[in-house]
Image 1 (cartoon, rainbow, N blue to C red):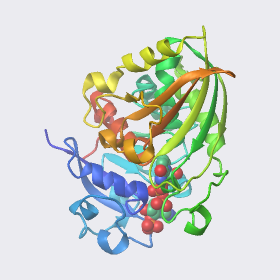
Image 2 (tube, rainbow, N blue to C red):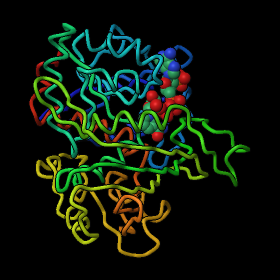
Image 3 (cartoon, helix red, strand yellow):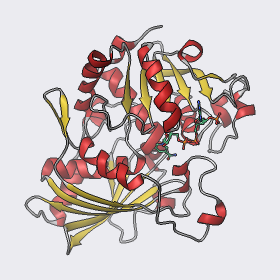
Image 4 (cartoon, rainbow, N blue to C red):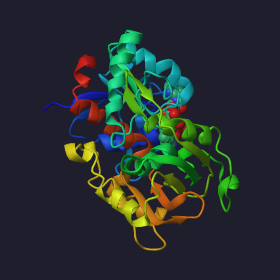
Length: 355
Ligand code: NAP
């Protein structure tokens, strides 16, 4: 099968680099255009971008010239957007109108009623919203978003519990990596030896995106899950990997063992389909009393699985556990890539493809 050409918008950033890294050897997609801001376009990728992640620098594309991020210079049938929210709001609809399927990491369109907010293990049926979006907006392509990284990791653990028992309430306290703020992110003098109990808009994003993600696709729209949720978000001196302390109130008050069984038995659609970026085991369950840990666990499975440990009774809500996931793999580029693989598998890509 010939590989589908793709564009990366925001290729020079933290998430853009992860896209380049993950797409270098991808069986279904090949990088056609790399785009960034006006500051960078016209320069080679190596000139414009300081490569800051492991692996082959620039994914072997250091001499490729960056193009302006507009449809007339950077069109491909599939566009991966690692743009900040401001430029995403302006540029992503232009690509969708031109016929591209845009897989966005930005928050600009996540909560729009006709935009799928997707985690393929959690809510693949929400892809159906794309038909409504195309009808409403008259687009040949479309925009599909992945959630905020903290919400992504959280719903990976909540989805099997929602399916097995139903969820009434969630209390989540995060300890989030500095790479979540992009590059250069939080100044070293603010974060070394410190914990910052504020990440702008993060708690609001987790609290509004989680019910949409766990909601039901019915009557052409998403009926948000009816659950109470409170998020408390903190920045910590960790490079990659968000840790979350989760307490959850489940219907029927299941035991710790029943919760463990529900998480272990979960085999969602991407794993059944064998999508290339799907981890074989979506939730790694830990039994050691001091796991999961960022340094020891977060890179497992290419950063695409999430880790659950210390499942135990919670005097407040019934069950509590520790959760860990990779913010720039599962929470960003890897999640977006998995969305595109789902779109290919479900046949929605062909309607938007223009060569
Ligand atoms: P970043 O490191 O700051 O990179 C931003 C990228 O956007 C750069 O390539 C930049 O290009 C480009 N850009 C900025 N202004 C532009 C404009 N006006 N036109 C075209 N391109 C422009 O940010 P990031 O951490 O990679 O995040 C990218 C997106 O993913 C954000 O929306 C973020 O919220 C989301 N996200 C990030 C994470 C994470 O863990 N980092 C997780 C989930 C979602 P130049 O180099 O030319 O300035």
